[in-house]
Length: 182
Image 1 (cartoon, rainbow, N blue to C red):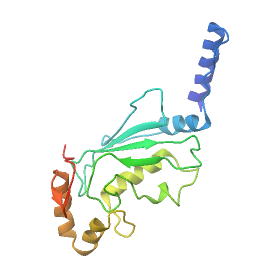
Image 2 (image 1 turned 180 degrees about the horizontal axis):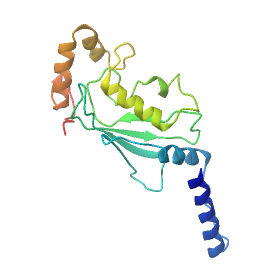
Image 3 (image 1 turned 135 degrees about the vertical axis):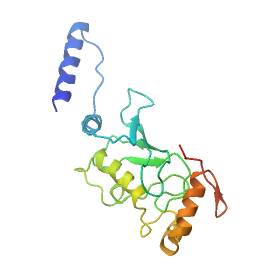
Image 4 (image 1 turned 180 degrees about the vertical axis):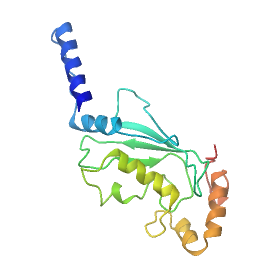
């Protein structure tokens, strides 16, 4: 809250020094995103980047799991946040084509807090922790990629082999996947 207050004061000082000029309005969504981002305590396996530094509503999260089946992979997710945030969840999409029960071949992510369980009290940290958890414990009971979910449920060894093959840029069930090994 102090950071927002100091930003507002700096903005007012700048306006007084420059005289009356066009004010750039800061929206409620931008304030909330700024607050959420300032409270993030990302582990070394995650990093955020902003393609346009003036646009905090659109950013990239890079995730490199250090354990689990997806260990040593490099995954990027785009976050697109609307002006209705936090009343609407962010739109999150995986930038790589990967073999995962909860991420379809177009990069859509199946995470309950990005859909029906979203509440305005949730923040970006909750979404990021949820994404990290999907790589530690893929959920076969709520799939977007039904083939991957079926493999996970019926034959964990086959699922493990398919994850490894797909992460190397290989072909699984007729689909060629992006190489994500770092």
